[in-house]
Length: 435
Image (cartoon, rainbow, N blue to C red; front, side, top):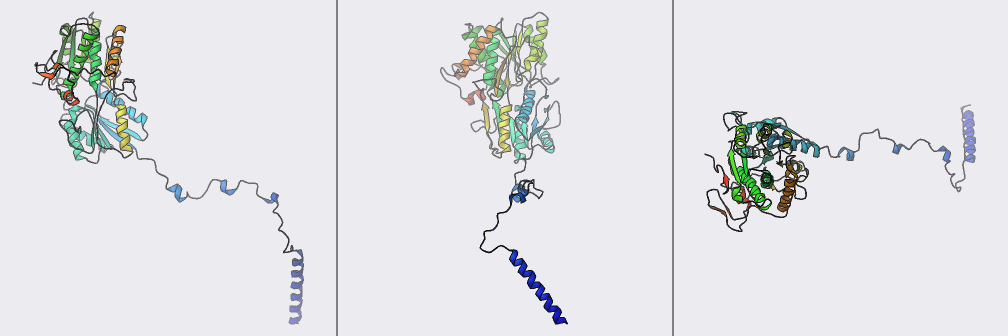
């Protein structure tokens, strides 16, 4: 019985196999083409957004650079309408021009406003706030800047003014993480002197000076040289008939009980026949006092310093302002730090003679004031064109104030002779050295 059932099962399987082989295509026939209608109508999977983790190549894409924070130490108030505000505005310019950059700051960095606190300590407080670069903004901070740079060799330090890393300077030191940035304000000051000479009706120009050092002597002398040149060459007057007097207050701005009062110094000028006062200090007392004098019936003028918009405080008496534009130099330095190419450098930039007021290219500018007459403005433009064409006011014969020879006939001063000017020049009244 079991054999009979087994036989019937095998017979049935043979019949099914025969039927299936009869339905299959012959081996020599070409395979049928796949019907198009059977393809999927949805977008191929390869074009769909991946749901898997990123590939190894994608995971290795460079991360966004770490934010670069720079710290700014300012000798005066950040809004002084002068030297310190020019630096503060430059810091804001940097953040507008560079991505991934921000700044922190401390202002009023001086012994009067912060007794018992050093610039080094304040710089370290900026490090605590995340700063990776420190900018010291005053010649008054030179000792602190050098000490801090040596004590933090991994932190780039920029000293605005100063000559520490100038290889041809008298005070050179090799400090790999330190740089000095300055502009050739001698040109801007010469423009200020020219504007003063073209305007004065009494032939008496006063210079409101800060403290006495190499920088302040050469800048005061630059005002005098510009005034003398324009007095003689544009007005045709005898230089001997031009009075130029310097009065120093003892610091970059007023510190009651420590400095002479710049308001009083300006008033003394105006009340003694000086009808133009050119400022060399960080603040605008000469300008504000000129405005008061005009309101009381006097005809006087003033030229502030440092800050492009300083004239706005008293437009009716302002002849113009020579100013620093630190922004482009700071951008250049910080970009080198950001991209890893930073190296110690010394910079002393001239104006961009193609456009001295170009905010993106010129370190030194001169913005004319509303009180400058049309004729004086025309002559000032001609004088600026002469400077751009190579006029060098630092050409002999020039004597020091004591009558000794500074430059012989036809001799041109070197940058070192100008930078380290040891006295005021003959023809200038006032102290040459501090008492």
